[in-house]
Length: 260
Image (cartoon, rainbow, N blue to C red; front, side, top):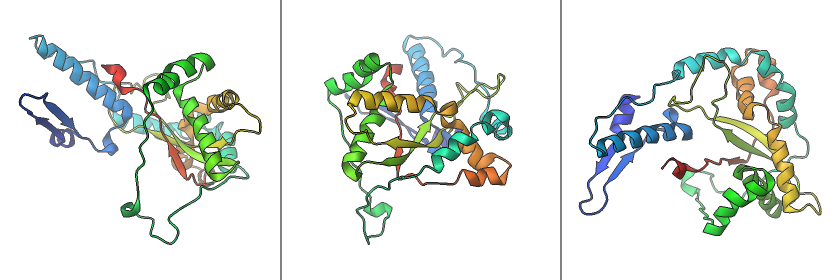
């Protein structure tokens, strides 16, 4: 990992302009939370050097990725995970699921034909999403964004139920002795979520409340789904996790600028 990280760091001296430090790390060894850890340490080291001091010892490391992986392997067969089986089988076997319309037709669906669409919110819209809506509905920005997605999917594909893959940080507390709060690695958990269209006459606020309550019912923030599907020793349980394929992935990374 040190070798990968070292070869992925470059300093650009831009003369009179502000210099830039580029850090590029493969997703296999880092996730969104890990970036926060690295940037926090870099910020701390920079501030110490800026003030003419030696770099003091940074916060201690937590459990290793190897320790976490071994613990998760055992945890996949525990009763705490097995009690989630009914929830996840209900999700993957949901009736009446709709598929998203496709526009590539007979064209090969390859990376070379892919396109990226980027949209930005205005300052007022961003404040509403991050401050006003959470305060009014006791919700998270994630709840509001998924509610908006339900409306957009309905307008695009018609009313119904859609399977959407959601992402979690994956750093659930499974053992008191295991702490990965400052461990760098790819911990991300991915799990299916049934997103339903707004009912007839349902207001945006009612849609938000319904989606929020549905999200709160997900056990362990979706962590157990992957354990049951890939790591549980019982083949029948692993097979039971096979179901509807998600056409869409959704991920809200949060606010990176809060660190600075």
